[in-house]
Image 1 (tube, one colour):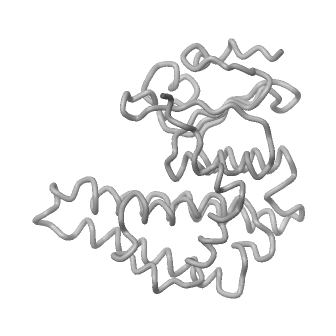
Image 2 (cartoon, helix red, strand yellow; image 1 turned 180 degrees about the horizontal axis):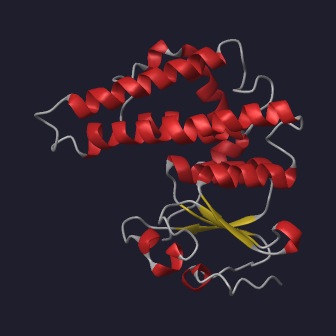
Length: 236
């Protein structure tokens, strides 16, 4: 049995099975990336619910694994050289899982780097800009009621990013063509989230991006997505 005692986070979220991947997450766009990927890869894992309501992500135990205090994070008891490894940042975790299994990323070097660039496109563009749009459009609407600039700025940038994705997806099943990859997994939860969490479908003109919308439905309809999008479950 793997010894995870070197990871203080396991004292707050004990591992029932320390021999499998431990996932510390929540059903946010960033969080579900990892549960969806783990389901796609059929890797056994144990999800732990990190409550924002009680600021679990700011506790000393969580910060010991992710000093940035954000979900998701994982511990893989079977890391490089057979030793446990802890990781944070959803893009880094996706790349790690893809390279660990040799799946969800092209085997050739050119395809691998092309996939990584689209992962970075989401991490550096879609995630932050959609997140800022959602913050000002929904969660801080009362604070900017007399100043339309923040919503307009991030709305317009989010739409610009959607247009980039639209151009990429025209004539393609997935971002990388015929192969479903971590580029799709890192991106689609944010397009979905801007709709279901922020109510931004109309203001972001989703109907003007048909290739993105068709791709989004293909992503959501995958069996691994249907399961992973609902993990972790809030404890009763």
